[in-house]
Length: 193
Image (cartoon, rainbow, N blue to C red; front, side, top):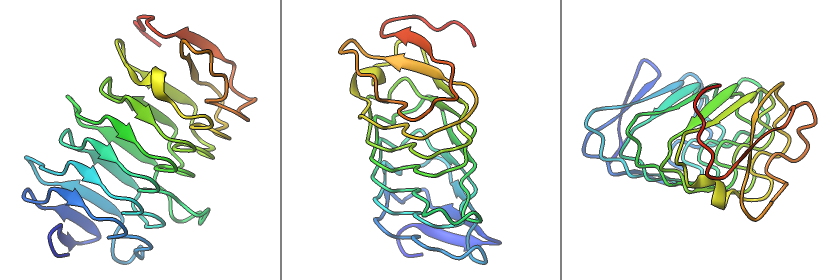
């Protein structure tokens, strides 16, 4: 896969010289070809493009610490139950600042721990993540000031960490009636969950 890496036994190995995953590169990839992504170290990938893995069968990914931007629809799923991204982790210390709109829409992840470097989460980025039950934002995080309305729309797991910004936006977790609503105001120090 020119300028990205190679696939062996359903694993995409992203080359150390690759600087971005292009838009649409692995969109709609069949499960017979791709189920996992590994970034060779040290990674130089700074961006995962729009629709890069949309509707692919990637099940888990660790975003390398070189990634600054995950663009819109990068891992979006069109409701096909077999197309299931169930694990997203971030290599620390992370450089990630932006998660675009619909980036992980309909993934079946159960928890997400955001690096403190994240400053922006787009609309519906984690919308309809029906298994999402725990969201962790590290201490001293700036992201709460720039979470789009509906970023977590219809994420209906059984528990969560609700984050409220200074401007009192209330729609980050719209339609998540099952979540008890722990509120942590911006500037609070989270010491444990």
